[in-house]
Image (cartoon, rainbow, N blue to C red; front, top):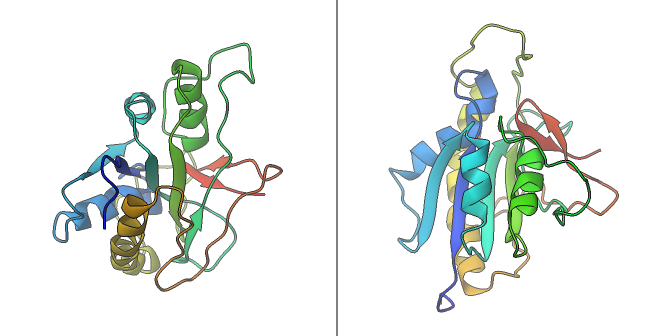
Length: 198
C-alpha cells in the first residue's frame, strides 16, 4: 500500500558514450518496457548534473539514483548504497554546476536548497569497461553490465513499492548481489561519473 503523498524519483545518470557508464540511462530505457507505478517520477538525466540538482529540490521523499560505480566487485554486481548527504554548509565556495559526478550533484543541490535533500539511495552496477576521460567515445555497455540491466529493473520493481509505502524503509536487493550502506567515514568518491566508497 502506498503512503498518501509519497514522492519518489528514480533517476538514471551516466554518459551513454562512455561504455559501462551508460548503465543508468540503459536501465531507464528498459523501464519503458516495464514501467514503475505512475506516481513515481522516472527520468534519464544523462550527464545533466544541474538539472538533477534542481530536481532533487522539488519535494521528493526519496530519490533512487541508478548509476555505474566502481566498488571493486565482479563486473555486473549490483549494490544498493546510501551515501551520506552534504548539509550545504560544508564549504565556502559553491560546488561546480557542470558534469554528472553524483557526489558533486548532491553537494550542489544541498548548496542551492533551503530545505533538506530527500533521502538518496544509489542502485549501482560494477562496470567492466571504464574509459578514462581522455579516451575516445565508447558507446555500448559490456556483457556483464547489459545482463545487470534486467536485474536492476527487477530490483527497482521490488524496492519502489517498499519506498512508496515507507520512505524510511531499508530495502535490500530482491536477488542480493550485495546491499550496503555507507557510514559517515565512507564519503562517496567520483569514478567515471559514478559513486564509489573507500
